[in-house]
Amino acid sequence: MRPLTMLLTLSLALPASALAQDLAEAPSPSATAASAPAAAPLDEARLAALLDEIDDLVESKRKFTQVMVDKLFSFSEVAFQEVETSRYLTGILRDNGFTVREGISGIPTAWWASWGSGEPVIALGSDIDGIPKANQKPGVAYHDPLVPDAPGHGEGHNSGQAVNITAALALKEIMERERIPGTLVLWPGVAEELVATKAWFVRDGHFQDVDAVIFTHVGNNLNVSWGGGRGTGLVSAEFTFAGEAAHSAGSPWRGRSSLDAVELMNVAWNYRREHLRPLQRSHYVIPDGGDQPNVVPSTATAWYFIREMDQENIKKNFDALIRIAEGAALMTDTEMSYRIVGTAYPRHFNRPMAEAIHEHIEEVGLPEWSDADQRLAKAVQREVGSDTTGLASELSELEGPPEEEQSGGSDDIGDISWVVPTVTLRYPSNLPGLAGHHWSSAIAMATPIAHKGATAGAKVLARAALEMFERDEILRDAREYFAEQTAEHQYTPFIDADDEPAIEKNAEMMERFRPLLEPYYFDETRFDTYLEQLGIQYPTVRPSSAAEAGTGGPGR
Ligand SMILES: [Zn+2]
Image 1 (cartoon, rainbow, N blue to C red):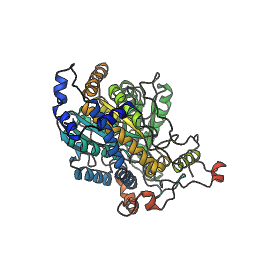
Image 2 (image 1 turned 45 degrees about the vertical axis):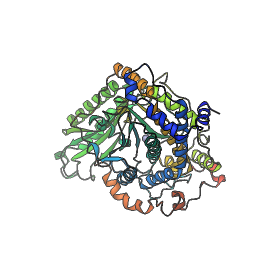
Image 3 (image 1 turned 135 degrees about the vertical axis):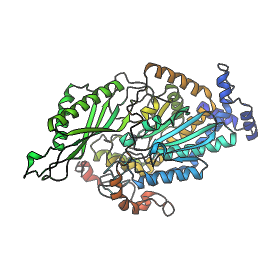
Image 4 (image 1 turned 180 degrees about the vertical axis):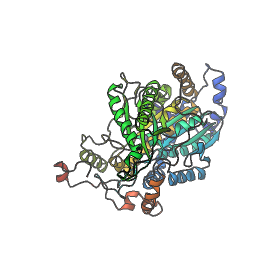
């Protein structure tokens, strides 16, 4: 038995009224902070009892959590088009007494939901957008979309708000009864896949009065880390060239091709890559490459992500890219303009907060996976050519900064991590060993794996936030760490007051697919789970002979 549980057993002997009285007599967090270092006498037994109670509360909300996970999965909405998702989530929050402001930072699907009063203010965030072309039936261990070519949750962002809202409602219940002072805020990572909103939230001051941010993100284990050096930051920008149309055969000499400019720009960047630091990552697509071959393209656009480990190197590479784009315009007699679509600062997570959360991770532990869960996981791993390790069976360690910087993806939670003490809690709703941003990452996301992972995440989140409301030295230490972090490096955002959020992105895609997806929205009034609604046997795997012969490769 763990120490906290032992304390709980003792404190259960206390009548509830005694617990309430302890609270009433406890000094408020702000009073304690002012009179530091004489710490408030925290009633450890009472806290232990409350932690155990909140664990049970989250447990009792399993059904509620599952419905949210399944519902968001079925909406299958992509960046900036999270219309049904946000309507549904804000509805739940309003019904539960939260005050909701919609459309913050001029972003229609963004919102800010708060409950409670006074300090501290703890804000819980999680992303909500899906991935283009990642549509996939849940629980089926091979590529089998519900709606071919439609977007889907091939990242797992359908689960994070279920974690946060479940934890928040459990917290609210206890804070109300125990009259614990403080404010809870919930907010969505809109368009995280375009890293296109969090820097705008920061720019517009939404986090000014927030004391701590606990961000949740889907993963395949239950973990937190602190420090920097893991993953990249980025600038995302569209470069548009304007030339002159002409008949491609009749009078090609009268045309100035914007597509030529895009191609020359891309070729030049691909040469430049050889002379960049190996940790950089950069990639592009061509959203506009002209209309048809017999018309010289008068406009063309290349859309780039420029990633590096720190702000200085991101800027250096981005400046080089701008010069290359100017060169391409010179070579083709076209005009170039560019626009920032997204940006993510390199992340730096708060050590005292991570350490506090990690203790709760050890208390909660990994979910118990069923044989069916493991069969699905291994079949998917086999399908995509990964090691068939199944689901996580051991908790990962609390990780500090890596000895050597590790390149990889980015998340605009980075911007927030430089203006308020922040940590990302990862919870085990997805499968290990997948490529990411792919239909295979959607397979588990409306199955018992995602549901159990979300409940485990919500337990850790609720416990950790409750402890932060109660034990004010965590946030005091977090502030101290943050002061050191920001003394060493000053946050220099890539956007300024004139950069507008790219809210028109993906509108056409959703216009096309929404009518096809609607018939598949999860109806929780008629079905227990989304798997049941779709009539999917869990798990659905290839006949073992075919799978074991390795005939089922990715991309089928
Ligand atoms: Zn993500």
